[in-house]
Amino acid sequence: MERGSILVLGIISVLILSIMAIAGLTVTDMEIRTTGNYHVSKMAFYKAVEGVEKVKMEIAEKVMASLVTSINYTRNDTKEGDGAVFTEYITGTLNLFEDYSSQNIKQFEGFDAPPFKGLSLGHDNVPLSPVIWYVPVTAMYQSGRSRAYAEIQSGIYSTLEVKN
Image 1 (cartoon, one colour):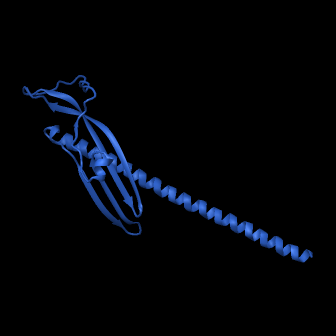
Image 2 (cartoon, helix red, strand yellow):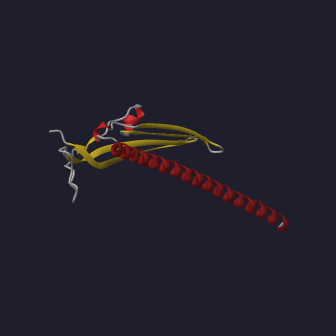
Image 3 (cartoon, rainbow, N blue to C red):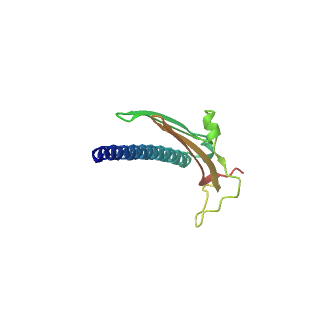
């Protein structure tokens, strides 16, 4: 009778260890997926920041910042071993993004921009006024089957020629 009880205890021990191993593999798989989702969402956020920086560069490069209207950016990359990576960002909100349209940037209307301290605005009788541009940017980043969206609403401080 004792010889049979050792066999039963051995089988129960193997069963318990198997259950623990399966639970450990499940937790590990969930952690890997969570880390992947976190990476994809961070990449979407950084692409939205890239869109804001792109608008900032365009405002700085244009003679008249009011000539900057909107941006649309799409890029498809295939990296060896990682699969396809698709990136897209626009000026506008997520609703516009889903409609495949973008929004023109516009002056912020909540309050007047504060004046530049210690700086004379304008030259050759062309007065300049400080202005804050309202720039919403939405980005999408997709890597394999994982996809994430990020939306940033920012204000960009610049100057605008005042029409007399």
